[in-house]
Image (tube, rainbow, N blue to C red; front, side):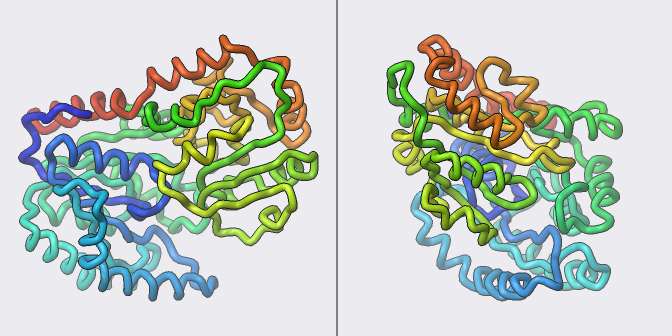
Length: 389
């Protein structure tokens, strides 16, 4: 765990792009670690990034979100897994991609958020935003933050449904932030043009947790059971590639979130398990022979450093992935790269003769050197310097 530091008197407000109950990733991990280090943490979920007025689901989600906001206080009382000094706050705002909506935020929704923060005694907090929107920046400024951190973990300009002025909004955040973090090489190179001091902090891993999925196997064992865990959304997840592997006879386990009704999920060789807590993942992964990261390679995913990369390595199991830039740069010799169904199938068929104990050991060692504990200590040092500058 992080050691308690001298900056714990500073509350931390995290403006998240994901809900607390969503797939466990950098947002929640950072909140939990800072809370356990002694900070009072307010994790703000529900800050809308964009809208799709033509999609009926938009209105259904808006109603659901409004109801969540009304119920959030009673919900959080039941969240026994939260550190006592961490609050998950359900914000209610309109999408930032229309002038009329932004005005509603400015005049109504943001003041309500600020009023709630004042009631909680939040003053001059460190604001940590994963959101590059005008609304998020207004909240940060109105909170009279002691420092601003922009933590960029997505290539927002290439995200489907992004507001038309997303580049301008993100530019405002890059100018305003006291510290800019990114997770991938692509995002570092992109934002260094405007912020030469941008700091790259890749994802890490809870090694002890994911290593529970380790199981010693004999070299030469045929690869039959393969698995992907995480988000399955059409603009980054390659459904066609996975369907080809299912057609090739592999038994596929898919675990996590999806917004798709793709026929892959009804394939006889595919078993789908909805989102589970991170604590339950190792048991589900233990019986699999190999893990996959089957992302499309496009303008959006070039900025993606999969959070699951080191998590997969910590299981000791062989990992086959598409050639995303950060996987090519950092994982040579540790992850097998393949571009399409044919190459994935070839690698999976060859694994019995490619694998050996030395490769398993090297994967485990690399994961052990890249824990979230190490990552968060590095980030904490940056924050302490920032607050004491």
